[in-house]
Structures are given as C-alpha cells and as structure tokens.
Length: 185
Image 1 (cartoon, rainbow, N blue to C red):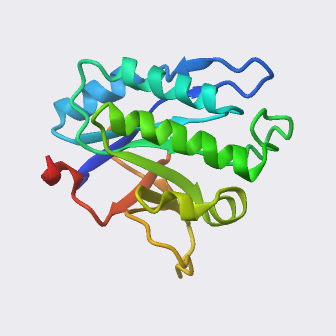
Image 2 (cartoon, rainbow, N blue to C red):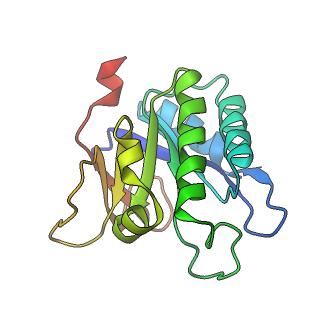
C-alpha cells in the first residue's frame, strides 16, 4: 500500500483518578508486523499525566518498553482532549501544567537517544499548550480538513482517520511526514 513508516501506539495512561501506564495490547504484534513488512516505526504514548512526575514516569515506561525494537522514527507525546469522558484526569489541568508535563516527557525521550515529538490538533495545541516552549521539538499535527490554516511549523501531518491499509482491520490514521526520520540515522 506504499506505507513508508508507521506510528504505533505503545501505550496509554488510564483516564481515571489513579491512572496507570498500560502497554497497548497490540504493541508487540504491531511492531513485529511492521518490522516483518520492512516498515520503519515510531511510537506514541497517549498521556493522561497531571504532574511532571507522572510525565517522566510515562517517558520511562516508554523507554523501558522500547528495548529490543529498532525505532527510527519519533517517540511522541500524544496530548488531546477526551471528549467521550468529561471526567478524564488530564482534561482540565492548566495550560502551564500541561506544557510542563509535555516538556518533561520530551526531555526524557531526547536524553534516551530518541527523536522526541509532540502530537496535538489545532485547538488543543493553541489553547492548551504554550507552543513557544516547544520550538526545539518536532510537531505532529492532526487536522482532517482540506485546507490547512495552522500558523505554526509541523513536521508530520495526520490528515485522515478513515484510511485503509492492507493488513489492518478497520480504519487507519493516515499521515504524511515532511522529514525522512529514517534517513537521519
């Protein structure tokens, strides 16, 4: 299907009060399948961190679970609203705390030798993050419209959540990267 890279969900933090870090049940299968197909991989972690300490815990969880895998694309901090569950633990943290959490995660990932990246959509990134503090990091932008009006730099664009890819049941997110991360290694 012409897939050149895959961004695989490594895991997530639960949305409840005592959210724990969980490995995606398909992580291993997805990583092994991508490797077998010759597809380079990056990973993302869906955060619900409410403190810098939790964000660092998430980064450590990611780093620990990447052992043994060849990750040539970015390791991503995925921050977004949980619209289906209004009481999600990170929905209402302040912009300052969310920014500090994201920075802490990205710094840990960078220190471990991976390429760190931030993921968000237009509204969330502009209203819920201080983007000026992320100028040293790549950004993965989620927007499903036809005309991009985002005024900030981004390295990857998630342009659809309704794609089809051979070997994946159901819809797949589709992305374009403006950087060839695999070539950077």
